[in-house]
Every structure is written in C-alpha cells, then in structure tokens.
Image (cartoon, rainbow, N blue to C red; front, side, top):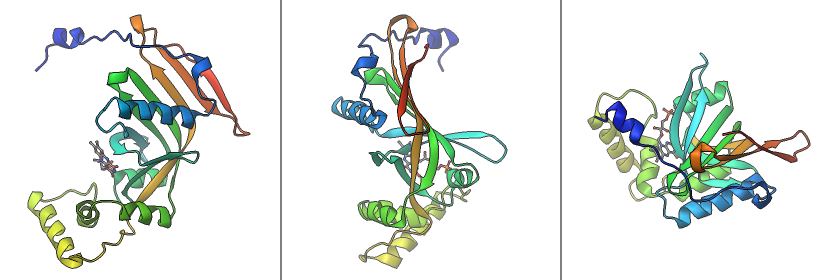
Length: 216
Ligand SMILES: Cc1cc2nc3c(=O)[nH]c(=O)nc-3n(C[C@H](O)[C@H](O)[C@H](O)COP(=O)(O)O)c2cc1C
C-alpha cells in the first residue's frame, strides 16, 4: 500500500511542450486525429482507449473504458452490447463524455456530446472485422449481468462455438456501435508549475467551432 506521503510524492512536472492556439487545426476532429496518431507513433498501449461516462436514471454517473474504433466528422464511435448497463443508461440519457489520457505525451482530451446508435450496416461491417473469438464472446456474454461463476461464462462460450462451428458468425442484434457527436472537445497539454494549456472547441448553432483558452 502506498502511504499518503508516497502518494504526495508521485508528482510529475510536465515539461515536454506547450499548446498554442495558432497551431490548432480549425477542425477539432482533425486536431484529435493528429494527437491520436502521435500517441500511436509513441507506442502508447491502446491509445484509442477512452473513459466513457454515462448517467443513470437516478443521476448517478458511471465510467468505464471502451475502444474508439472510428473517428470522423460524424463523431467518436465505439462498439458494445446494447443490453448492458451503459446501453440502458444511454437509452435514458444520450448525453455522454469521453476522456483520453496519454501520459507519455502529457496530454488529455475531454469530449462531451450526444450519442446515437450506428446503423445496422456499420455495426455488421465492424463485427465482421473482429476475430472469431471476440465474435463468439459477443454471443456468450450478457454484458453487465451477474454471473454465477467463470464456469457459466465458459459454458456459454462453448455453446456458441458449437452452434456456429466453422460457419460465419452473425452479428447479434443486441450488439453494435454508438457514435458520440461532439459538442465540446478540450485539448489539455501539461506544462510546468501546473500552468497547463487547455484549449476548448465548442460547436456553435450554425456548426462552426469556437475556440477558447481555459485556466488550468
Ligand atoms: C482497455 C479496455 C478496453 C475496453 N473496450 C471495450 C469496448 O470497446 N466495448 C465494450 O463494450 N467494453 C469494453 N471494455 C470493457 C468495459 O470497460 C466494461 O467493463 C463493459 O463495457 C461493461 O460496461 P457497463 O457494464 O458499464 O455497460 C474495455 C475495457 C478495457 C479495460
């Protein structure tokens, strides 16, 4: 266990670089994709891993990690089970938020927006690109449900394997994508003495992006 003193000593002064407004892409998705490519080039493990926050009917926020699989002008897309906890929360409140943290680059990106399901065609197309084991896993696991034990999960996986054998595994109707259309995207670059750079894009009613610098 780390003592409070050890935790307090885990202090990092960020000094790699700054972020200036003049160097930003006018389009935040272009800026995001440039940062993601840099994170990939630095060999950060799963640089597309993002924390997804959703809110339940009682107003309780929940977070978990998911993988970004498509990022384009329409937004940030991830794939999941449509019957699990996050799906129930998104059905009740489609507003969500994402955070990326790339420690090796001293960078964070925070996104807020509204989520919609991807089309069945997009979900099917992505499902076909997954390894067979992951496809079977989607059939075998009732995401977020309580399970009696590991053996139950493994039995469900074996049942799916026996059902499909070497045949093509169809995408379950309870599985697919969500796309978060961004309303705000904030780029955070760590700086010395906690004077970090924070530049936030906000989507205006006409679709243009306003850029503001925020105090750290
Ligand atoms: C690195 C990492 C990547 C993950 N990627 C996904 C993903 O893309 N889709 C997904 O449904 N769960 C993914 N998970 C599992 C989720 O964090 C979570 O446990 C699961 O989606 C159930 O969440 P829920 O009960 O809130 O719906 C990932 C977990 C980790 C640690």
